[in-house]
Length: 220
Image (cartoon, rainbow, N blue to C red; front, side):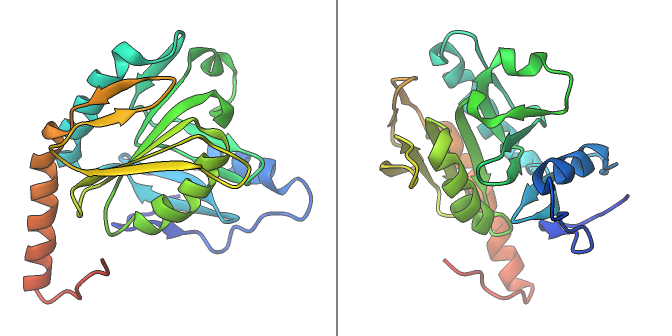
């Protein structure tokens, strides 16, 4: 199956079966032959295919990874590799842009890891992914994952969510790129966000160029 798209695209003809739907859908995701540079996720009962992060985000993810690594919980690994994490309670399967997870979760034979292994998930959001990042991921991560970092590349700010609960995260803070921000337990350190500004400027320029070319102005 080959799907090429610049925005997340749902495969509408793949619906969850009435019985064992979540596991069946995960198996379908596993068996999909997605193009290089694309990932398949399970969102709202549909398989959604979207491209991995833009090239200009690599520097941001590297800066974030290098700062997180010394503070990660013992036995947890920081990576940007394309692994799918399953969340049966929400019937979701997400592949975070960056994850910190218990290495033991990758000893299984399957191709998707348990979402409870995550100590942190990070997403670099843009116009094409903001709805899923701000709604579905926030709701799902907010019930299980200790820390969620949402880097808004258009608004040039980082949003830190923590203290998950059955109703979602209880705490949040936001700061513009360039200012330090506290990453809470189990990390407990000040994150330097100054390295994120270059990619944010590029994102803003790309949006401006798109508007000049006659595209509709995206919602704030």
